[in-house]
Image 1 (cartoon, one colour):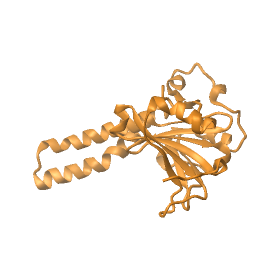
Image 2 (image 1 turned 90 degrees about the horizontal axis):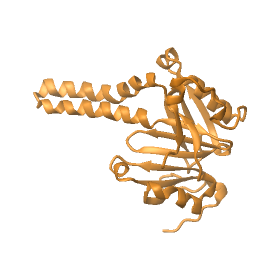
Image 3 (image 1 turned 90 degrees about the vertical axis):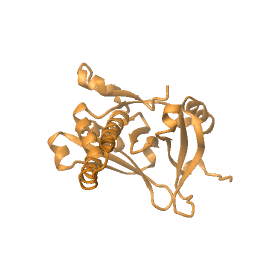
Length: 233
């Protein structure tokens, strides 16, 4: 199958690392395109279904050199960890408890809540957002770890949201939307520091300095949250 897509149609690219592929050092590379959709109305195409992570920079250099670079990013603060674990484990724990007491299942079923706690920790560990003069890099995980490269000029909508509980802890969630097929595509990170989310919002509006390098340093907690994206090395 051969598809020709004009460079101006490219809205974003993202790399997906599944739970099985990631430990083996493999991933898949996807492209989000405006105006080109499949039967389901999706504008997402697989450029490389299976590649080694160490090969991604050279492949991007050959195919999409504008995306072959890294940016400085920020991870969620440590106080977000409990929220990631709670969201990932609460439903599994409740269902496990009901099944264990009503069906008298084996005690090994309680491994499921432990795995969900580990899943929440993985989601926290992988979450990050960063940018430079014209590119956002968003990293997150639901099941697969996803790293998205989004050109600022391709962002259709940028939202910064706070729930009641996030407001109490000065956290926020950011989401970026791009045109992709008939339905669009969104990429986001939950429970970022509110100040980081506001910086990202200002940057999306072209009101801020180009990179994160201007952030004040010296704060140990701030330094611990710094990360270099996408992190293939």
